[in-house]
Amino acid sequence: MEINKNLRSALAEAIGVMLFVTSIVAVNFNPTFRNLALAGTLTLMILVTATVSGGHLNPVVSLFFFARKAISLATLIQYWIAQLLGAFAGLYLGYSLSGSTVVAKITPAGVSESGAFIGEVLATTVLVVIISRLASTERASIIPFAVGIWVLAASTFTLTGAQANPAVTFALMLRDGFTQNHLAVVLAEIVGALIAFIYISVLDGKPKKAKKAKKK
Image: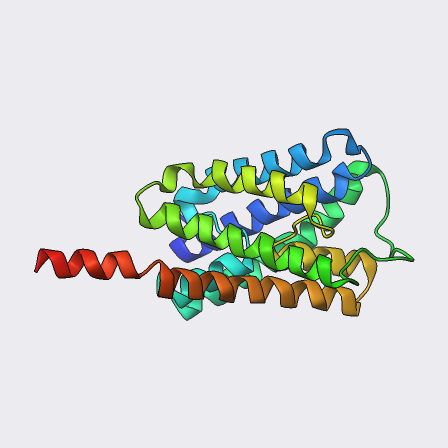
């Protein structure tokens, strides 16, 4: 059965995010190799969806590529909807696998200290920079592994577990209830994406300009 290209891309994003969020929710009940499981799942989902949708699996990553004019506004909106729906489905699938029900937690995990906020900004900034640099230097094939390694590393030294993904935060918001802490995480993720865009546009753009001038 032939499926519309836009629909295929949206489905790929939804399924990729769904399985990633499933691992986040379900692994909490068997946390022995938690960070490794999350990083491994994300790496595999990017590998599987890369040739279909670009393997964004993250509203911030999609926003970044929209800002770089790599995708259209219509595609951005489609991806955002697919990613949030995937996160919603992943939350329930994760709880189904664990044999538990989705209930709000009394003390939701979030950002209540400046260190946690800064950690989430850092995790998101570096994530976007890694993706952009590898894509622009013809090393896109190693992006899934580089992202997985960064998520594994950052999850060990940030208080938020290096969410760096508004879709993941959305799923946790559904689990914990709508809180100011979750909004702070989303804000940190947006700030991180903006910092990454400024870095790549201003600082990382200089060598390219010099190279063009040399050819002339």
